[in-house]
Amino acid sequence: MIRLEKVGYRYPEREEAVLEDIDLSIRPGELVAVIGPNGSGKSTLAKLLNGLILPTQGKVTVEGLETTAGDLVWEVRRRVGLILQNPDNQMVAPTVEDDVAFGPENLGVEPSEIRRRIGQALQQVGMSEYAGWPPNRLSGGQKQRVAIAGVLAMQPNYLVLDEATSMLDPTGRKHLLTIALRLKASGVGVVMITHHMKEAALADRIVVLVNGKLVREGTPSQVFSASEALTSWGLATPFAVRVTRALKEQGRNLPPGILTVEELVNAICS
Figure 1 (tube, rainbow, N blue to C red):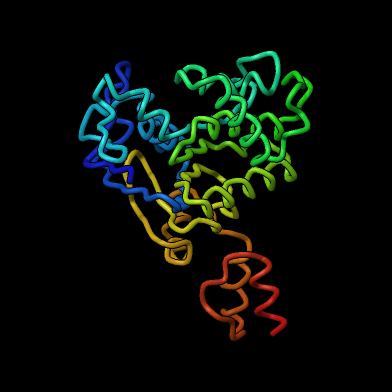
Figure 2: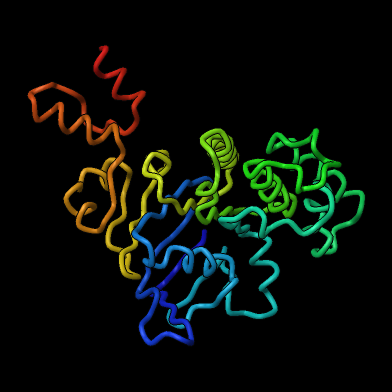
């Protein structure tokens, strides 16, 4: 698993720490959503998970490999893939297939194996027919899917999505969430940093960061049931959760744990 023990981080140009005393574990096949207001340290946490930056306090280990061990940094980043917010910042090659090949080429993978991985990764994200396309002809959602394919070609055990859906339209967001859920089902650990509570409701576990501290952790039902605390931190609950609460206050008998509109509709109809 990925394990963070008393992890903190302080940027050189800032006096105060961005993260403090973070204890967190992420397991294979688990979807963990990280939510919190702007400036709470979510993106810093994402970079710490794959060794892009190193903790100034505590330690981060990826399947037993400590990220501060300089000779292991490439193996850590192979195991933990990171997808950033803006897909245009992740395109490095003239064609889609060249972009997907970039990661395994840098790992020294044999050309024949790289070719196999390109085909498999593009198929996983539904982009096989665009292999020869230049990235500038793709939509934002398609670019994010190509970025994920590039990470998958390195055969990671974990995927970190740092607000990867924030610049996408609803269709692109839906495609990306489908890929994340499919990867989770295949045994890949997925960390999804998001401002969309509907996305967070799909997770196995939610982590709430506020002012650089982990203030709450639990299942979506456990986290979203604390609506007053979330509101005090500037966070909303999913629409279905708010409507369910309002209906219960009017005396409607609805089951606990409703998180999505579909679940709410089914509960009302039954």
